[in-house]
Every structure is written in structure tokens, then in C-alpha cells.
Amino acid sequence: MNRKYRRTVIAANWKMNMLASEVRAFAEELKQKAGPARWCDVVVCPSFVLIPAAQKAFRDSRVAVGAQDLSLHESGAYTGEVSAAQLQDIGVQYVIIGHSERRGNFGETDMDVNAKVTAALARNIRPIICVGENAAERDMGVTIERVTLQVKTALAGVPASKMRRVVIAYEPVWAIGTGRTPTAEDAAAVAGAIRALIRGLHGARTARAVSILYGGSMTPANAGDLLAQPDIDGGLVGGASLSPSDFAAIIHAANPDNYQGITTA
Ligand code: 13P
Image 1 (tube, rainbow, N blue to C red):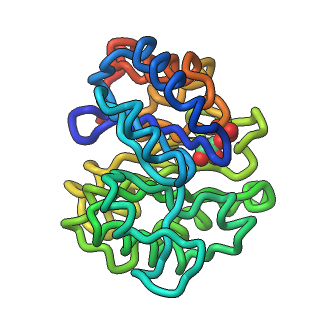
Image 2 (cartoon, protein in one colour):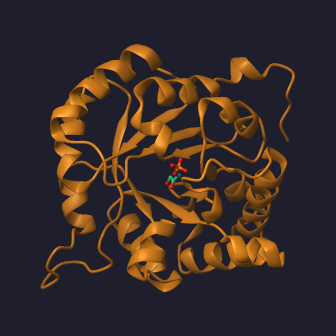
Image 3 (spheres, helix red, strand yellow):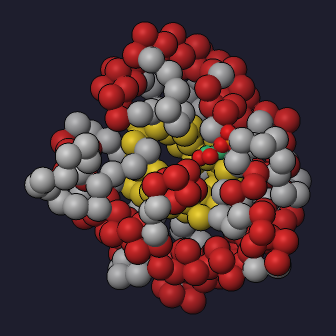
């Protein structure tokens, strides 16, 4: 983390879990266990249908509510889709874009991701852009090439003025839901490469303002090490975000008071 230049973001990706009846109890327990957590921005991303329930349950807190996807189309005959305008209309502040489960299961391409990022930014919704290599790409040693191409394509046409609203999540596909993670140093090296790419595109001031998260089997046990890396500015948490106490523990792991002695560039 580097709190001087950018926000720390701890985001929950609930995926296709939870029911409306469970959201309130989750919110009460999280609020009680995490407290105001002023050292970071906390985001919860439920399924579309649970967004109003989550907004209501977190109304009296600093927790923001996001979506897990949006349509790349503006409006019209796209049955089943949800537009950026509709998300903005109900007050959604963040949207996860290009998660590997959408890329892998629903054929989403880097170009689709770019269109969705553009759609979100046009409606003032902060995109959390997911990128990451799969196991074969990692074994071949092409992680940095793969990830930088994904980021470059996702950000095509995004002006520097909007970059401060962009969040990037580095999620190695082989680490999602597997209990396996890269070392904190390896994850930070990829986050650093992403920041270097943004520096090349938009300059140092913009690059140092963008929050880059790590995702993939983040737990209370490994969050401290990952979040202590200067280039890792938070987490996108799947499985562990379904437990209010585990998610609260990860939020507490992001408290810089736990990192005295670590200096950041
Ligand atoms: P897990 O934390 O369950 O590995 O999921 C990570 C993820 O996909 C977050 O988007």
C-alpha cells in the first residue's frame, strides 16, 4: 500500500452467493467487526438482484456497493443485460469488469472489457478491471506479457483525466478459489509491471494514483503479507468475503498501523 498517493480498496466479490435474507445479518456483523475502517474504502459486490438490499443494509456505513458486471451496450433490445445507466440510476459506485469467470465461462474478450470500462466511466461508476494469467501462461513465463496486454486493451481510449477512477485487480486465474497464491513478492512484481505500463501511457502522477488490488485466495492469514507490498493497494476477495469475520479481518489487515517500519516509494 502507498496511502500517500492512492486509496486502499478492500472489495468483496460475492459471486453467485447469498440471499436477500442473509444480507442484513452479514452487514450488521461486518459493521460491528470492521468498524468505520477509515484507512480503506470497503466495497461489497453482490449479484444484481441483491444490490438494493445491500445498499439498504449498509446505508449507515462507509461501505460502498458495487455490481459484478454490466452491459457493454447503452440500452435497447438486450434481454437479460443491465446497463451502466441503470446501475448509476440506483447509486452503484463500482463495477467489477472482466472477471476471469466471465472471460472463461461467457467468452468475454479484452475488447468487450474495454467497451464495458468505457461504459462504466461514462456513467461515473468506478471500474474494477480484472486481469491475470492462467496456469499455462504462468508456466510458459508469459505472465507479464499477458497481463500488460489485458490492461493495455482494457484502458484503450481512457483519458488520463478518468484514470484516477480506475481500479485494477490482478487475479491470477490459477489462484482463484484454489487456496494457492503467488508469493507476495511475485504478486507485487506483476502489480508493479501494471503500474509501469500506466506510467508509460499517462505519466508518473497518474500511475501512482491508481489503486492496484490483488485477488485470488486472499484470506486473513495471507492478507497482511500481500497488503504490505507497496504496489498492492488492496484486495478483491471471493470466498473469504462471504464470512463477515474473515472479511473484517482482511479489512483490519489493511490498516497501515499494522505496518510500522515499512516505507513506501
Ligand atoms: P477467491 O478469493 O475465492 O479465490 O476469489 C477471488 C476472486 O475471484 C475475486 O474476484
